[in-house]
Amino acid sequence: MRTIPVDVQQLGPLQFIAVTAKHRDGVQTTTQEGTPLWKVQILLTAPGDDKASLEEISVPAHQEPQITPMTPVMFQDLRARAWSMNTASGQRSGVSFSAAAVAPVRTNGGEK
Image 1 (cartoon, rainbow, N blue to C red):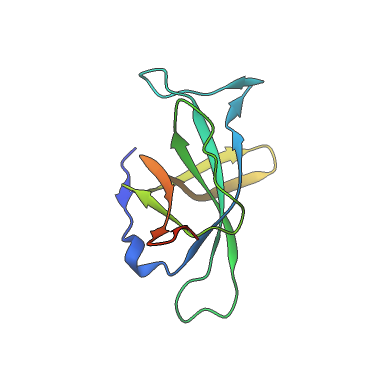
Image 2 (image 1 turned 60 degrees about the horizontal axis):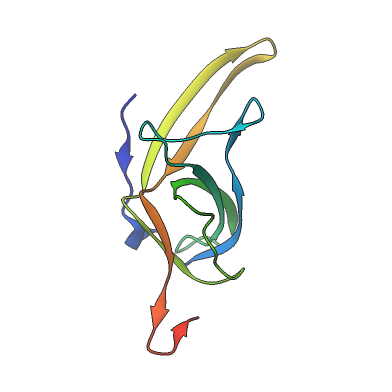
């Protein structure tokens, strides 16, 4: 399925909340090249929206990203993928996000 590039400049501030290993059937998932995948949870406050939302973005990294909670972050090559599936309880659909990398937004004073 195709992915759609996301213009991160249009999203507003992204704040790191937490990271966990991405698992399937009890085993950490990896890219085709064998790099472990991580679920990076962020707080997103879109411009013009009065409510924040929690989003998860899949990111490959050989080591778990070490970022302080509530630190502003940026993503490299952020992409969205629409999905849908039929289940016993009915049709489900949504959007999943992935990126090539995540890093804290740095200022002259370092991590903020």
